[in-house]
Image (tube, rainbow, N blue to C red; front, top):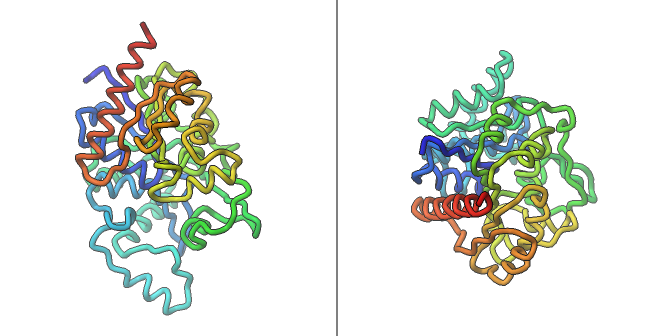
Length: 319
């Protein structure tokens, strides 16, 4: 499919599963990924990029599949020693994982573009599917709660998503510049697929970079999203709680509201079949299908089905 161009917007575990599904399908060579960098933060003097690393480790078959993040066959000697020295170690960074963060931090100090660093790390893990960044600038999600403002990792890892969220902000987004690679990829896309990632802090952070949402709205691509919810709940992460906190319903409609300005198609789980009619009444093409992805075959089957659905409806809309 040399003339087909697909873009996947991805964040975290759901994004990585979608990326793996496409990588195992006939659409792999047609696809590039735009990943979330707003979860990035500094730990022990090292710059950590959790969502991007989850993409890299997953596509490179180095992910710890039981927990969904970090490297498989990990050890934690460095972290254990840091704990003995009285350092905060709530952010679990394994010894192999630390090598990635040391390498990234060194290159950042040398002035290497963040996009180029990702390319080098992806090459190290044998990944052929390009991973693009929405921006090379620092954008960080800040979660405003009743007890104060937290970084996303503080909220997600340290506090285990327990505080009530009153607002979400993307620090640095207003002055960030979108990468030329991401804008070019969006502009030439036939299909833009939004992974079943958190619409507030994963996909929302990508869309907060000036020019990204606008590029999607202006593109000729068929834009389709996979809901991260099954029966109003997420498999992993706080998307359901955050939708409610942000004044949206924790169902398909709430997710759709995040993407209303550009969405053509929506994929919801069979458990949410009763929500399809309402979505269709708003002009959406709706695919109802099992969306839980555990095995490689399940990931590949779902993503192939979604892309084929998108291409078929793109043709219908163009007729």
